[in-house]
Length: 294
Image (cartoon, rainbow, N blue to C red; front, side, top):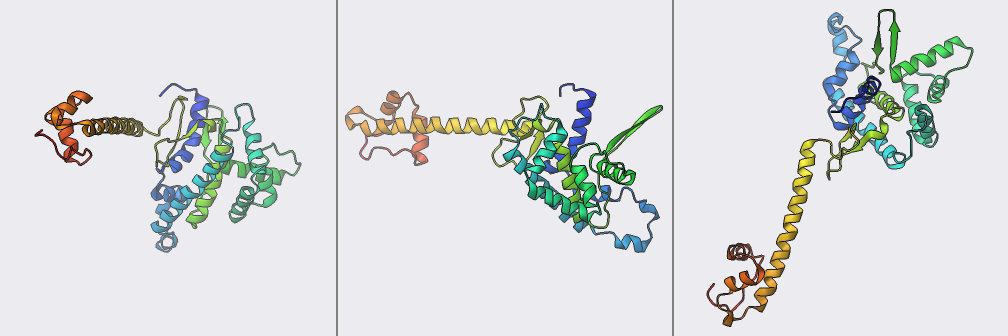
């Protein structure tokens, strides 16, 4: 992998959860651990443990998360991927996208209401602008929601730390899936690396990947080799069909006076008698009806 700057590396790490879900690497166990990571599980009583959703709930939620996020990404890819975004501010790009997709914006507001985010606060968050209101409580609520959606870097004397975004909902895995899909899609819209997201060109592969080289076409070297093999197979099949057609034309021209038909057709077509024998056996070539011994 080529060397990349620290800033680009951070953006890649921020986009990595989106790719993991689209790629199918995100599993129910990780979703359960992410949902419970703020809970000290060792301190839970047996009654509290019994109230935790079973693993089957997380399996359903994980599928819902991938399906929902993939649907939104596919719609973005189909309608807006070709729009130039390199010179556009990422915040403005995300705001413009949501303004032109009012149905999606309404869906986000519905999810936000379910996770107890007040509508005026969420509207301000989706504006992706600095809050200028003098209401400190409102401004603090907007900042908190932005941290939940985007994460943040905290610097202090002697070092710093990063807080990743996320909704820690341990009681309702399906609500967690909806909220996380919304959060990750907003991360994608605001990422400067979004133009490097590619969809694997191998027919039937649903995977997405991040192309940092600018030359990637397939999600893995295995799929790239498979495409090469498929192309070679198509080429070989085409060449074989042409040879069979050419051979059949000369078979029709053969007459008993020419002697055994296989050596004669082989000479005329630059093919081997073994080739003719093979494809006659496979019933791809029809020998002359009345022919001299081959």
